[in-house]
Structures are given as C-alpha cells and as structure tokens.
Image 1 (cartoon, helix red, strand yellow):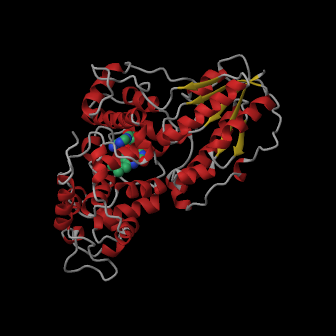
Image 2: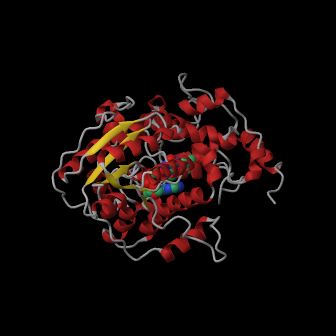
Image 3: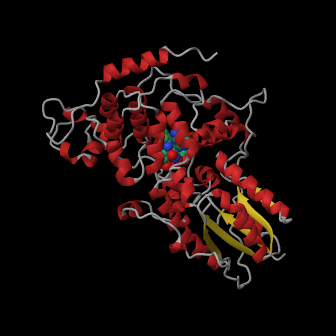
Amino acid sequence: MNHQLVWFRNDLRILDNPALFHASNSAKPVIAIYIATPEQWLSHDDAPAKIDFWRRNLAVLKESLAELNISLHFFEVDGYHHIPNLIVSICQQWQISELHFNQEYPINEQHRDQAVSTACHQISIPCLDHHDQLLLAPKSVRTKAGEPFKVFTPFAKQAKLQLPHSFDLLPPPVKQQNMQVTQLADEKELHQLSWPNIDQSIQILWPAGEEVATDNLIQFCQSNAIHNYKTSRDIPFIRGTSFISPYLASGVISIKQCWLATKQYCESSDGVVIWQNELLWREFYKHVLIDNPHISKHKPWKGHTKAIPWRNDETELNAWQQGRTGYPIIDAAMKQLLTCGWMHNRLRMITAMFLSKHLLIDWRLGERWFMQHLIDGDLAANNGGWQWCASTGVDAVPYFRLFNPITQSQRFDPQGKFIRHFLPELNSLTNKEIHFPKDHRPASYPPAIIDLAYGRERALTAFKNLASPH
Ligand SMILES: Cc1cc2nc3c(=O)[nH]c(=O)nc-3n(C[C@H](O)[C@H](O)[C@H](O)COP(=O)(O)OP(=O)(O)OC[C@H]3O[C@@H](n4cnc5c(N)ncnc54)[C@H](O)[C@@H]3O)c2cc1C
C-alpha cells in the first residue's frame, strides 16, 4: 500500500488541518478526495448559497493543494449510504494505506463515518479521524460531577481554564514529489458535480478562500472593530461583527486560528473578551450536540416543551419567511437573509422569537427556513439559537422574556437605517414612524399580521400551561 488518502468534508483549508497534516507527516504521498452528496444536502436543508460556497472554496483548495503536488479528486453519490463502498473502491484502486478525515458531530455524519471505518477495517485499511472543529475535544469539558454542562457561563469558565495559553497551528504540508495519480472511472471534474445556481450578488458578498478568511479575521482583530464589539455587535446597520461565520461553518478557517488571533493581533479589552465568549457559545452548542444526539433529530432539548401547542399557520409562516409581517425590523431582517444568505445575530434573535413566541409557530419550521438560506448554516449553532429563542433549549431565554420587535428596532436601529436599506418602500417615513408605521403606512407595505400584546399573552399561556419538567 503506497498512499495516504485525505477525505475533505467541512474543513476546506490547508492551514491547521489535522487530517491533512497527519496524512502528510507520514513518508507516503498524499492524495485528496471530496465527495458531493446532493440528496443528503437536500435532506439536511443545506442552503444553495452554502453549497455554492463549498464549490468556490473547493476550487481554491484544489489550486492550493496542486502547488503542494497533492491532487484533489471529486466524486458524487446521492447519499451517505453509498460512501463506504465508494471509499473502499478508491482505496483499492489507489493502493491506500491509511484514510484520514476530521471528525463531524451531527448524528448522520457520525453514522456515515462509522460505516466507512467498518468498511475500511474489512480491507485492513485504518481510518484515522482527527479532532478539528472544537477548541476542546468532545466530552472533555465536564462539571465537577463529571457531567456535561447545561449552562453556558460555567461551561465557558471551565473551558477557559482548560484552554492552553496558546495553540500551535498545524502548518500546511511540505511540497511533495510530483506524482501521477490514475484517473478513476467514477471520478468527475469539480464543475460536473450537482451544484445549485445562485445569485451572483451573494458570491460577491462572500468571496471564497482561506486567504480571504484569514485576512478578514486579522483585519477584524487589528482594527477597532473587536474593541468596539461590546456595543457595535448589536447594531445591524454597521459592520460591527467579524462576518467570519461562513468561513468557520465550512472549515475554511479553523476555530483555533480565530482564538489565537485574539491573542496575536490585539491587546485584551472588554470587546475582545466578549468576542471570545461568542466563540465559546459556538463551542458550547457543539458540545451540547455531541452530548445530546436527540437534538440532531428535531427534538427539543427540554423534553416537556414537546407539549406546546405550536401553530402551523402557513399564511403567517409564509409572511414571516418572505418579510411581509408588517413589522419593519422583522421584514428587513428576513430580506437580509433572502438577499445576502446571512442575517445579523441580533436580528436572528428578534425574528426567531417573533416566529416562535408572538406567532407561536413551531420553531423547527423557522430553524429549517434559516438552514435553507444561511451561508453559515450550522446544525449546532442554528439549533442552539432557535431553541434558545423558543425557550425549549439548553440554557434558553426564560419563556416570559419576549423581545418586542418595535422596541428592539427603536433601540438597535434608531434611525431606521437598516430598515430603509432593505425596505426602500418605507424610506419616506420619519425616524419615529419607521419602527411601526401607523398613519403613513405605504399601500405596498402589509398591515401587521399580529397584535403583539395578543401574541405575547398567547405564548405566555402556552408555556404556563406546560406540566413542570420535573
Ligand atoms: C436563531 C439563530 C440561529 C443561528 N444560526 C446560526 C448558524 O446556522 N450558524 C452560525 O454560525 N451561527 C448561527 N447563529 C449564531 C450567530 O447569529 C452567528 O454566528 C453570527 O451572527 C455570525 O456572524 P459573525 O461571524 O459576524 O459573528 P461574530 O459576532 O463576529 O462572532 C464570531 C463567531 O462566533 C460564533 N458565534 C457568535 N454568536 C454565536 C451564537 N449565538 N451561537 C453560536 N455561535 C456563535 C460564530 O461562529 C461567529 O462567526 C444563530 C443565532 C440565532 C439566534
């Protein structure tokens, strides 16, 4: 057996990539593969914007690997169940001695990887899975009683204690000897895989590549943006956050690079600590997903909330999805999602709470819509965010703390700059009126689909009526 095989998935980079690093550290030459799974993407609600982002990043990755004389080969199967046979066949044809990949934590990916390991074991090829997506290894952050944490703040405190002062990032592989790799019969070119067509404006907003991601990160950490983060992160009209989420979600940059950047490129400040905490929220939700596989199966973390009489009103759901609720901040946010493939965090919270509380529509429908449109869609973060807002999740917002979209709008978009950008039909309204137009609501803008006080009371009653969790 002559070669090492690296299977790229959600880790589309060469720097600090454990699978690539360890494969290339052996004396044997490395070959790389990527397997497209369009049916699985559909069943996981992966957004076309995100899938297209993978395509663009794979093109960059292929070039970077080629400079190291590592060839990246593309395959396509419908779903995960075809992958074990495909990999066995690849390993046999290319005389592979070891398969390397980085771990993924949602349940279908875990099952896929177990099946691949079993199939490879049967032909005596070891599978080496590497810990990559987290700062701290799965199941390594525990309470004194050895239990998973159920509350973010003590989790973050413990995680900080366990984090090393600094990380050594894994370097890209050294350039290997040029070699000819036999073309396999079922191999495809990148452009022949089943990619969706997406709006070019989204591609321009989110350029691909490791270099872009690293530059964005360094710029964020070197500028005042990170120090001002405490206040600017809540203002959707300004560039107050890092915009790194699509790159992290697709592994174009590693979480260790992000953490390290806060030590390398800036002095500590309140802003820096709060930004690090956001990275730890990401970490928390991934650990929660690993410890609670049931949340990969559309189940609430708090089992007793299953009894909430969620309303599945299609007309109202559709109005929310399309940004036609009559509440400007909600509608502008939903337009941002549709046109940019991304939404500001504050707005994700306001829109998610409006759907799950004021409209009392099942949070899973909102979670799905977000996943179908977000370029940074990530099961753990999206599910965590939705269950936080719907008060069904781990360390969720108390059910009686509802964000009022009008007051949130007045507070975080006081002059309506964000609203005016995404809803130009409201441009002529004053700063006072723009948050909820009463007298001068343009004919083209819909009336409010719900009275907020009524929606609030209905949600409070639904939660109060739940049997106690204990
Ligand atoms: C309902 C809802 C759904 C969400 N869905 C996703 C999702 O699918 N993918 C996703 O990456 N984030 C999701 N988030 C979290 C957050 O909104 C985004 O990570 C953030 O808006 C991305 O922008 P940024 O990179 O500029 O973030 P920054 O503010 O610069 O934060 C840096 C990084 O920290 C992480 N982070 C920040 N806030 C959170 C958070 N609340 N939970 C988990 N990680 C966080 C992200 O990786 C982010 O890129 C969701 C939040 C809510 C309330």
